[in-house]
Every structure is written in C-alpha cells, then in structure tokens.
Image (cartoon, rainbow, N blue to C red):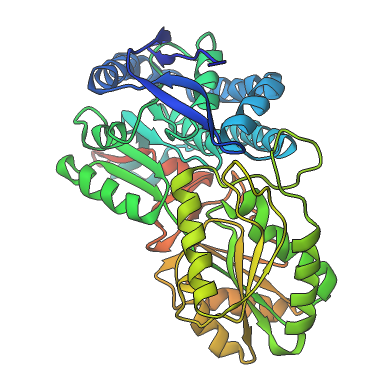
Length: 471
C-alpha cells in the first residue's frame, strides 16, 4: 500500500479500522486502501456540519465567494500531485487528469463570481415584499467515479457559496483524490464546513436517509438515482439528481466529413466513453454514411489505448470491473446479433480494457442502441428524413444531452428545439459551463446544477412582506 489518506471531519483527520481497497484499473491490482466510514463516522460528520452551519450561513456572501475561489487556487497549486493520484485510481491519461483538475479549479472560480441577491417583488406605499434565498443547511454530496474531482467541486462550490455546509462522499471506486483534496483544504475551509468521508456501498444509503441531512446532490446512474429518490423520500429531502444519458448525435450531409468525424469521435470516446454527456448513438445521413464510417474507422484503429500513466496513450481503461462486464455484455450481444463491429487495439492482458468499437447499423431496438453503454462503444445508424431522425432520437427514456452537426445554423436550431434533452450542442459537444444550468429530462435526472439556477437549488426561497400604513 502506497498511500495513507484519512477522512476530513470537523477540519481534522479521522481514520477507521475498516478499510476500502483501491484498484488501478490499468492493471486491476490493489495499490492502496482508504478508510471505510460507517454510521459512526457519518454521524460525526453530520454533527460537525451542523455545528459549523450557523456561523457559515452568517458569513457574508463576499467572504464565502473568496473562500470558494481559494479552493480553486488550491486545486491549481497541487495539480501535479492530484493528477498522478487521479490517473492511478481512475485510469484516464495524465494529461486528461490535469485537464480535469484545471476544469475543477475554473469551476470554483466561476461559481465564486455568481451572486444570488434578494429579489424585491413589491415596493410601494402599501407593501414591501422581498424574496430571499437562504441555505438549506447540511448538504450530502455523492460524486461519481468518471470525473471524481470535477463533479465533486460542482457540489463543493455551489453548496459553500450559498451558505450550506457539506458532507461529501466520493465513489468507493475513486476515493483517493477527493480525500486528498479534503486534506489540503483543512487549513483553508473553516472546520465542519466541508467534511469528506469515503466508504463502500452501504454508506450512500446511510446518507440519503440520514435525518440530519437536508439535501442530497447525487451524480451517477439512473438506476441508483431512483434508489436515492426513494430513500430520501422519508424526510422529504431536497434533491438534485444528475443521472445517465443515451445521448444522440445527428449528422447532416452538409458537414465536412473528415473534420466532423474527429469531433464526433471525441464526443463519443473521450474518457473511454465514460461521460454522461458523451455521444452514445450516432445517426448519420444516408448521403455521407459510408464516408463517415470510413473516417471513424481510421480514427478507431489509430488511437492508442493503454495505461494512462504511460506517455502516448490517448485513452485509458474502463474504471472498474462491474462496468467492464456491462460494456462487454453489450458488445457480445451485438456480435451475437450479427452486427458489423469495427475495433481498435487495446491491451489484451491485465486491466479493464475494452477496445474502441463501432457497431455499424444495429437494429434500433438492440441493447447497444437502447441502453447507455458508458464505455468506448458507438453504434452508427442511418437516417434520411429529418422528422424521422428526431423521433428516433427522442424515443429514449433518457434526456440528458444531444448534438447536431450541420452547416445550416437555422436547421441546427430547429432540430435543437425539437429534441427532448436538457442540453443540445450544435457543431460542438460537451460544452458545459459553470455559468449555465445543466440537467436532464425524463430518466436523466431531477433539477439542475451550475449557473444561477444551480445555486438556487441549494437554497430555500423565503418571501417576506410588510404591510405599510397609508401615508
């Protein structure tokens, strides 16, 4: 074991006898263990957050903004150390790990620039009415394994700037970098305002049902999101659920095929497809279908995949064994159905690798089209009619994001208006912003993160009115 990390509770290190193993997905080997928190540590963290809440709530907004901005500085100052740790536990290439940390730092800075002022509804001789946005109290944040630092900072920044205190739990598959961030912030954030605890599968349900937590912000799968919602219903917790997506790309024949193929490739295969807003199915117009398949084939066969800590590898492994098995099951189902598969190269021995895979013209109702693969596999389907392809894109029970690729801006905007998703990008992908609301429709989530709307989700509106005497 090479790392010794501790929980952060009330600004102090806390260890546990129970341990949680951490594996390097590039090899499958255990390389560290971390504390496996249980009910006692959770209760301790909630108590610390409760003790800190009143003082943090009453801290001026500008001071809270300054502290969240300072968290961004800490991420920048420690990026090299954190990136090495992130690559080892998550699998992504080091350059991409650095990119995640840079994005997390920028998110803190941008969120710290936002304000949520009182809103005066009425101000006249007879009445003054104002709506204020007050913090909920103690927030429970549960972050995923695909972008553990970035998606944790979404919760940290929004919760803290709005005056809440936070108990944050990273995924049991990728606990280390977030635990280390908690350690680095002990001398930055007042004790109890940010508590970071790691634990296995039992810890999440303990948080979602805990009576001392007023809101849960969860990022993960739709299946787990439904369990979170059910568990939180007991005491009517506030919820933000950012869940899965079966994101469609629609490619029209007026695009530059070679240039668009490169963009479509990375929209599907960034982080080895382990992105909630990655393209999960691509509808390509008949007129350019074969040239697009050819261009994507060349990219699939030439893009190196391997251990993210080794230079030259553009893509890493699937992060964990259960997800590896799910992706392999989908690929196997496509093979058994007789679909045409185009595959790249991946390490054959050791690690959780699935080669880059194109599934050419599968059936619309096949598992690889209907289910979210969350791995480096992309089904390619034909279309010829605009209304038909929109209907096919909307047929999913998910509605997180979509992309439209066309040289006709009016057509792009027209199609975007018809797609049943929380975000649509035209001639770009995954262009999320800390200043714009982000969320899903249907089974892709409840509520939004980021932007002013995201901040409001961490508050309770209170309306106060004063009856004035006539002059």
